[in-house]
Image (cartoon, rainbow, N blue to C red; front, side, top):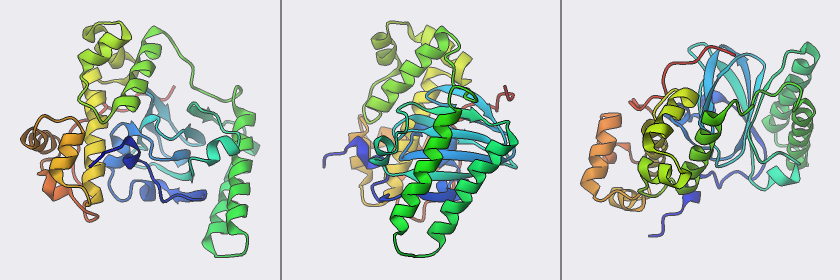
Length: 289
């Protein structure tokens, strides 16, 4: 069996789709809590609460009227907070270039009331359109997504909050990009540090500063998310998941899964697997900046 990184992406998405954050997590909070390459290009509009997001290794506070744009494959995690609520718009991979969307993540903090109302109206229009099967629905949904993209691009450079604040941020972003590239391998923090030209200690210190966790923790989150996602599919044997993720043995893979979830891999297979703890945490939320 040839395990490919694109097995972790959403191939069923053929048109823009609006859904809640609860629907995005598919009833399993670990799907958002753990850092992972985004399965689809997604816009996330926060409408309630305060929480945090970690985007390409950089942790940031999020709140009401924040927009996150995350390209497919970009390492991300999202904790909307105990009272948090938001809407997500998933975009097919081919739509990113066609809609003129950027290749890098975007974080906007929208303070202008008129701009907030404008994006909310666009989102509500998409939700109404997908509620009923009507002629030319696909074209209409794409048109709504195009308008959202234009709205976002108009606010980039004015309301964005994705600066590279220093050397630590730049290093961690580069590290996150390598994790995205080599997720289904057995590469270690030492391997990544060597490629980046730094010591593992320096990489870990930078991760603590930028992401609020160690370099090993960020890597483990991504590998745990990938493992749980593949197991949840139900059509891949446990030993195949272990082998193609670079674990030296199925027994080692079982210990890894049991340590971080409290369950055996076999218990996490199939569509019924929805909830369960994920002990690898990115840390407590940072204050809103």
